[in-house]
Amino acid sequence: MMQRKRLLKLSFSLICCFTAVFLAYCFTELRNLRPRQIVSKIIGSTTVETQVVPTVEMQIANYGSQTRERLQNQFRSINKTYPPKEVALVAIKDTKELQVYARNNRSAFYYVCTYPILGASGILGPKLKEGDRQVPEGIYKLTLEPNTPYHLALRLNYPNEKDWTRAKADGRESPGSDILIHGNTCSIGCLAMGDIVAEDLFVLVHDTVPQTSKLVIAPVDFRNREAPRLDAPPTWLPELYDEIKEALSEFPRPGKN
Image (cartoon, rainbow, N blue to C red; front, top):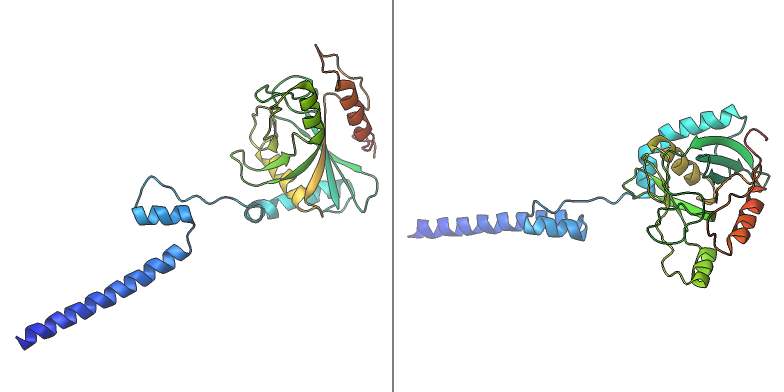
């Protein structure tokens, strides 16, 4: 009888020790997980996948080194030092070109290079509403967008304040949103540049001081062409095109540095 009691006590002690170790392990594992991951661990679901949301820092760690080597070579070819202090982009819709400009310490912009736009839907003319497949036209601010199904991206602040003002004057309630310059080769309402160029643009903007960039999107290059004739253009279109012309005057034409 005494021996049986000792065995029971020993078994109970072993069970308690095992339980304590197991709970400590679980606590350590769960403490390092995000809420969605914790739910997946607890319910033992095979359908809930652990997802890591990419950050700017993660994408720079993945692509920064190799991309900077390409960019340094590009800037070296025009006798400029990388990185510049500021970057600006000019998109010309009719020729499907994205021109890159840079400058240092508020000096004049100089031309860096031109990338082909591989995918852009719609026709010449501004974007007016959600689902019209149009690429916007105007002057925008670009910010880094690390989390996109199209590799890497820069996000436009479309619709900006002027877009909203014009939309409200027209009675338009949904001028569209979620416009990017991104990787891949196809797009609806955005500019698709291919994955390698998307890496170049992402790292280039990241390495500038403000980590934001100016973007001008024009239907044609107003530095050497007149505005296109559009069917039933909005009444405010001449004003918009004058703003774009003024913005383009800040940048030399390619090859005119």
